[in-house]
Amino acid sequence: MSELSKRTTVYFEPSVYEALKTKAEYAHLSISALIDDAARLLLREDREDLSAFLEREKEPEIDYEALLSDLY
Image (cartoon, rainbow, N blue to C red; front, side):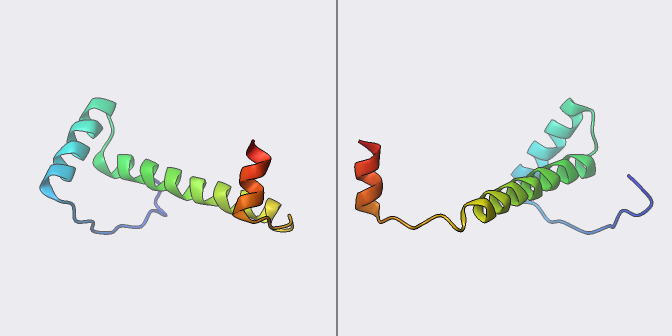
């Protein structure tokens, strides 16, 4: 991690913590690195969703019945 990294405390249910610990050991990562990777993936997915929304925001709206008829 870079020296610009921030530190925080996260609380997990014991079963979740054990699963993270096992996965981190298997992947040869620290739990911190595993959580950092997961957070980055989640944020990237949000950015992609927002981008897709912004690309389509000017499209005309159609009602549910029209959507169904277009599918068939």
